[in-house]
Amino acid sequence: MIRLALISFWLGAAAPATALADPAIASFNAVCFKAGQTASEARARMAARDGTPLPYALTFWDKTLEPAPDTVAVIERRCEVAFDGEHTTKAIAALRTQMATPPVFGFKIDLPHTHAPEPGTALLDGRELLRGRVAVVHVGTRDNRTYMAVDRLPVGWEAF
Image 1 (cartoon, rainbow, N blue to C red):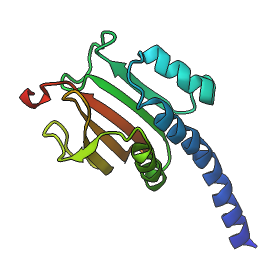
Image 2: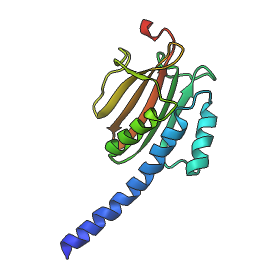
Image 3: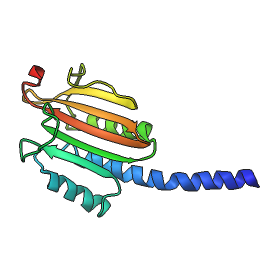
Image 4: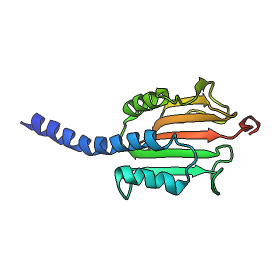
């Protein structure tokens, strides 16, 4: 009886985290790979999918479209979602499917020197894009949250 109660409690506790993971992963894949959007446009696209306030944290900037003070110099564009729980296996599977779906998201290259694995990193992948740009995709955990991110580096990133 106690075992059944504990299993029911555990399954009930896991459901909300999974319920938050699914829309975060889906919205990351649907929105974060689209070029030419401002931070407010990216947030609006995610809110249209998942409601307001977003049920996950969103970090977004694109320095080619609008100022982004206090951001990492070598990254010209970043899109990251973070959500409660450990969902890296699910996030990586969805991300790999997304990157392989036409139009394919670049081609795998060695990881740029601008990025290195941090504690909690589950995936860190360099991708060659068009017009001399490079992207780095990340999946990992920090502070009991899963994050998915894509950073686009500018032309000439090697000089950083």
